[in-house]
Length: 212
Image (cartoon, rainbow, N blue to C red; front, side, top):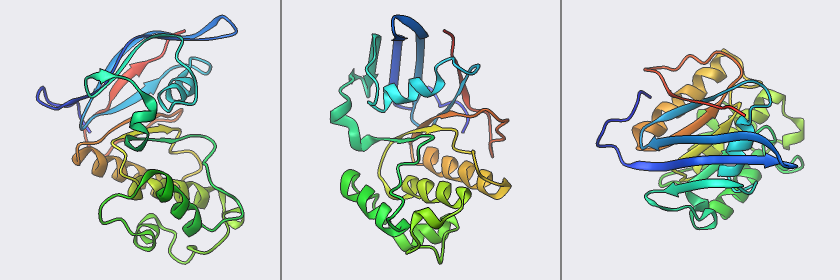
């Protein structure tokens, strides 16, 4: 997950992004570029706008100022919904549905990666035997793993991961890093926030420093 080579396609470009809440600046102006095969670690103090940036890119918040471009074209979030996957603090899981049912809903909304199989990826993610367990009965770590399973099943190119290491033990942290390694090797990219020290399996991520 080192910096992309000069020949790697440019996926996401941000120019002078700014976001305001009640006329008060949250972040910006912010400039960055993200190429295929890159992971960018979004850094900053609490309140610097790390989560807000990811929510803007996910289409959950409206950008106040600046320009976003995706694959060289002007950003039209609705047109790229299947290309972008957001995993936030709220995991987006229905508590009364099983892990299998939650994943089936996600596939129905966003499509399925070629060769993806729910039972197989649940086993790979460490949830074998919990396929039909209601999410409300899972531990915090198991719920996080259930949410992470979407990374293996959905065909998104850009992952927006807000604190993906939270509620995971060392094995879970290594799993996240492995998923990132696989994703970038396929030409995907990711923006990641993390309060804790992140030890990537290989290389160093690009760093985006937030400033209000």
